[in-house]
Length: 200
Ligand code: VGL
Ligand code: ZN
Image (tube, rainbow, N blue to C red):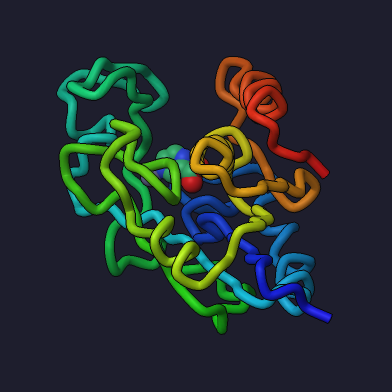
């Protein structure tokens, strides 16, 4: 029986994060089929979608002379500069064509031009809310299982914020894939463990 307090949060399973995409995560497409199966086990399924306007401030192309994967200091703190990805309405922003999208909620994030949003809960200033916390609380969903892309960025930030907000959080690492930029995967795993996130 499905537990009415359990939600599955499927993070950023979009074309641009899969092989062939603008910010491809190795093996990103391999987790589509098992995630589809896992959806059947949950009372609530939430999908997130990275959703940037063209010229977004997290794109290296918006910073003259900057290379993709370099770092800059934004008003809200350090920010990695990414290749242009997940442009609103484009094919790169679309979900992987094999992914089930019959979940309960599709939450878009990263749509404010001046601020990136890795987490499904807060933008990268760690204070501007996306509204997901309110949705979960008003439905009584207190136990969250997270899967998707990428382990060390959007999954990691979402898990840390959820733990900080008092949700019970599990990340199924087999159903995530990482970008792993300069040791970011090891840092993310250690950080999630320290925050009390269960890694399964
Ligand atoms: C992500 C980098 C930039 C992610 C999104 O989904 O992990 N990473 N935008
Ligand atoms: Zn993004």
